Length: 480
Ligand code: NAD
Ligand code: UDX
Image (cartoon, rainbow, N blue to C red; front, top):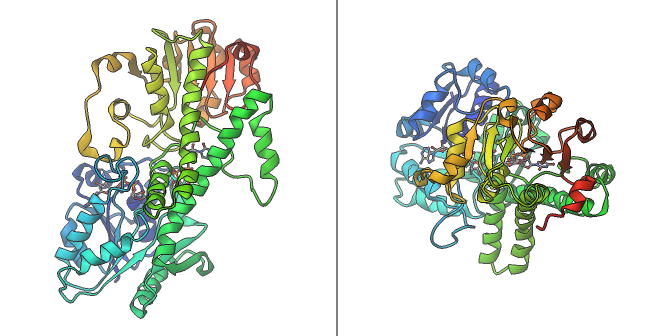
């Protein structure tokens, strides 16, 4: 029986290994982590992450060929294939701070693999890493030369949160990069055999190590670039009277452009896009490619502009002040169908409103109050470095309430900001909400989920990203 061990039981390690276990009943899969609460949760009925379909997959294999453990060294020592799926955050200090990937967690995992291994292993980079990381890892693994053969593969993960199980069951492609030696090719074949249990062979792409590592950063940069492009258009739409949804539809019909990832929004969030583009920018700078670095930096600048523009629009619409006014925040997760808040645009919008002294009342169906409080207290990039947790400042605490109902959040509010596209926000009784709010009552739809015309008929003043502006909003221009 092939034994797989995955280091890192997070958003990638957990679902990916659960699907491998389900699809490969003859493979034993153990997911290990240094975080005891995370492993305890995986071993309970309340999984540590919310992902549609995940519960069912885990239930089918847990205790049969899928195990979760904190005994990291034992399971790594016993494995034939070791996936490393630890966090690779942006550095917050020192050389490359604010851009470069922090490989502390990766390096400590690699050193541990080197120390405990007694048999040959294939070590798979599942985390997103800078190009050439495999070379550094190879050096670490072979530094004490115990005569063990380590083959390093790059097998970046392309799943998106909220659709992780669907993406893993039916991936657009699986990418495996390895050394162009016979040992490297044998290792590629071994990993390909695992995926071939359910992925059609023509969807498994095999490349050299550096192409695989770079393709992951490139894919995320291209995806984020599409969102920044459509968000840049959304500002122009508001200025000209064009409708961004109509523009997206019109350009998306061109088969060379395609219809996906053209939804204008308050900005992209999530743990990957910004981090990976910053990492790409840093790599370009290190290679003296300043023009290329600046090109990709612009994707992030537009994303920041979009979030600032949204906050400014709220404040300017409400007579240029939100001081002491209650503003309801509907949705805190970075997208629907996840409880993940990493780099969610809601953090920037809430901080902007708190900075302007608003009182905010937050409701998200999947995000706990404790998480929101922590997110609003963290400094930029600290979210992926758990040791840096800081308490929230007392003034901010007073300005924030987290509630478990959209009606409660909006009661007595002057404005509503929709920041996550949860389906339930489309179905709310907006007449009831309007009746309970201060007047004039505003809706700022950062996801284009509500029927603006219907809401206007009720009496709301509605701002929707990239849509023609209400007369009220035209009279109160926002300066970005
Ligand atoms: P995560 O923070 O959810 O999980 C990482 C886990 O690794 C944590 O539970 C942490 O405790 C554990 N860990 C860290 N160091 C360890 C060590 N030395 N030994 C054992 N466990 C250790 O992160 P994630 O979202 O799963 O992302 C993991 C990697 O995958 C990152 O490089 C990320 O960029 C990449 N990625 C993420 C996504 C996504 O949608 N989240 C998608 C594709 C790729
Ligand atoms: C992304 C990549 O899609 C995935 O391939 C990679 O493995 C990890 O990073 P994820 O961040 O989970 O996945 O979600 P994604 O669906 O890409 O959305 C990212 C952000 O962009 C979200 O905040 C989402 O709301 C936003 N978005 C997405 C838009 O604003 N408009 C769109 O059209 C699509």
